[in-house]
Image (cartoon, rainbow, N blue to C red; front, side):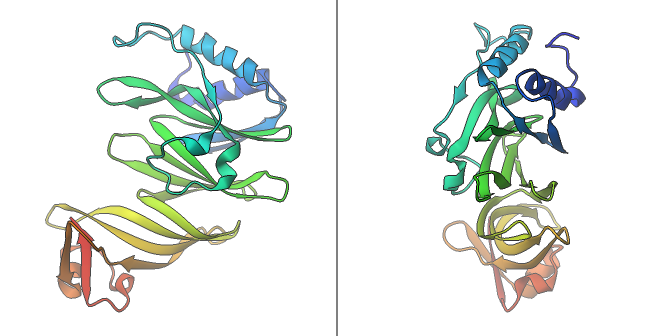
Length: 265
């Protein structure tokens, strides 16, 4: 099979083959619906770039492309402009990006998106998305600098992105949903967060956005202590709580002692 002929469902197989050819042949794979995390040791990045370039050399050019895609590896991750991740932690300074073999950023034209590599010592963790562009945030590392919790935000359309929380010690990936997340208390057992600009719809139609706080427990695989936060500022509409409950599918316990519910419109 040529480097350009891999089917979408076999992307993790393709990435694994490249990483095996360019490092240790024993690779751990943690798959989730929008991508995968692969990890092992002794990665030769020059070899990976060569393999990626071989792949791109066999792809058909887009009508907007004049030359073949060249694979680029970049450091200095914390100085990039972030669109989906809010407040990347200093732990993310070890992240490198590499021109993706498959993922793309598309608007009027499509361009290659980025895959991610975190390295410490001779170990590495490689993350990719099946579609769309992504960002990551390394939330927690252990005492020797190895990542334990990673937020993976994947934008597979122009208007919608989904957050995944990767728990490496527990070998779990949790789909947190859309919205922008801020994390307050972080451990491998559970995290406290504020979730901003969550999109929802009224029963009769029409979208609105709201913020909320909550806790995610990896032990029980569940969200708990979710509380609604009233919106403030421009573009806000407020409703009596009873009226808002009748207009939506929300449960009353979400609003605690609020008599009035305010959302972004």
